[in-house]
Image (cartoon, rainbow, N blue to C red; front, top):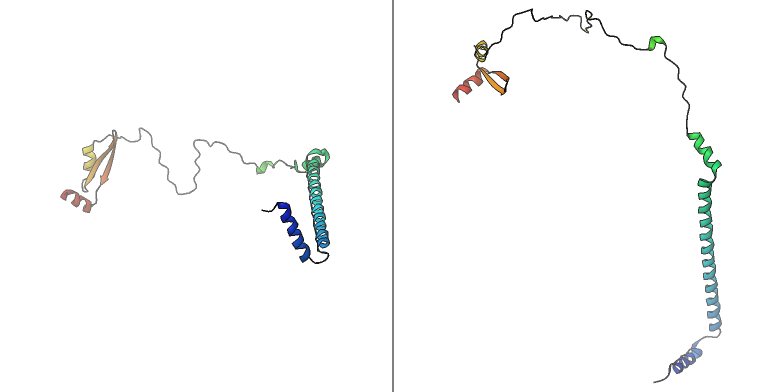
Length: 165
């Protein structure tokens, strides 16, 4: 086996014969040009980041630290004035209670019925009397609660079908 230095020497000899004249110089010039371009791009990026940071700091200081700048803007939008005047007495609506003998109606042909506890004699009727009052028609009395009933008057057709069932 040969040593690594021998291999490198052999490779250098082979490439030396195959390279055109001025190849090494052109390669070196191109490499230096690319390295210089990369340095300029890196310098431009650093400067751009610094300028952007200064711009953010300036905007923050302008918005929050300068008292005159904020005071002018907030004083304009903080209030507005409204002028009012009293209504004339004829425009004010007032209410008052009516006397017990005064009645206000919206229809002129309303008949009023006055009742008093002594105006008629009322008597309480039981269930059988109530069903007798509905005599020509069939009726049913349904209890819906302890002291509540409902009277249902049946039509002739319903009465016939109720008797058949």
